Length: 459
Image 1 (cartoon, rainbow, N blue to C red):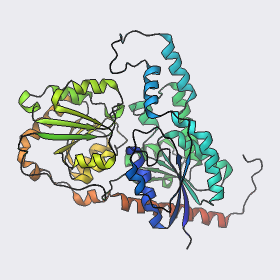
Image 2: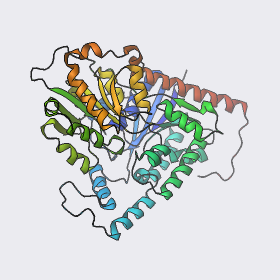
Image 3: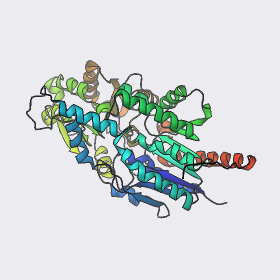
């Protein structure tokens, strides 16, 4: 039996680092063992938070990686441009924040109106040509497009015009419309023009896709409700997970550290969806004898200078480590007593959640009470949480961690069988089965339906 020929389209791919590449990297690592010949179409110069060459070493040699140029700006330049167009102050600026001119607002509007739905739209012209060429030359059976960035999903319509019967699967690593325009999880533009563009773009992408995959149940239900005319079986769920080959699972020690410190580690970017303001307020209000017990380590990029400035006001209890490759970040996580989760978003589950549960470390969560992250944490007994804006509840969360002391190993009893269901390899096997099923159904339809010549199709 010949393998299923799949093209995976992803904006950032190893050696680019960051949590956004891990799902695609996992699929590229494991799909070739499931009867799939995989081609990957990605960018040569993505705007990513860092480099992690170890992820690329895990990709099998038989995976054919096609790298193209993108006109997107490097990550550091993009952050400086964002400060310019929004009028935000750099960390060391002493300028009056109330001083405004017409120029930043004009520049902001011009850039946002040009780059919709996101800055990565600059990859689209090159992506379109490359995707069509690869589908044709490599005789691709199915295209899998994963995002964010959401601009990648615009390719569904472009490919459908050229290849009317090609199965196209859209993999939504994050829910788009509600997250961007109600929660502010993705803050490039939230204008009415941006909203109208995004609504039309997602509707077109869904209509032209063969199947939609989301990473959690709340996102799937949100999208199904948005498109009631689409068949329910078009929407699938395959969650994110953790790589058991990279994480050393540990259990909490029954003995406190000799210095009495409690180390709490946060991994990942601090941005709108993980705004630490309430956490910082709660930590500042702790009694001195409790506050002195904690060391909080933040590993990852900090999107807003004001977040960095506020964290540094906590003094010696905070350590800002910046971006680290995954293996180094996970090694530091293995030394911690607790891991920290901040999640304001009701629909999306941060990718770090799965690394946390895979590590065996208890979670201290500042979570949206109605969110899927809170639901999963409780189902797995993976830690303790307070409301994301509940300053007093977060304060109590940390006081309880001190009170718990050496009883942590007795009180923390996660559901290890349920957690094991989120290992990346079996999840990739589920994904492979889904892709085989979709391609098989399309092949059956083609064999039953006469081929119709489409006149005037886009070339």
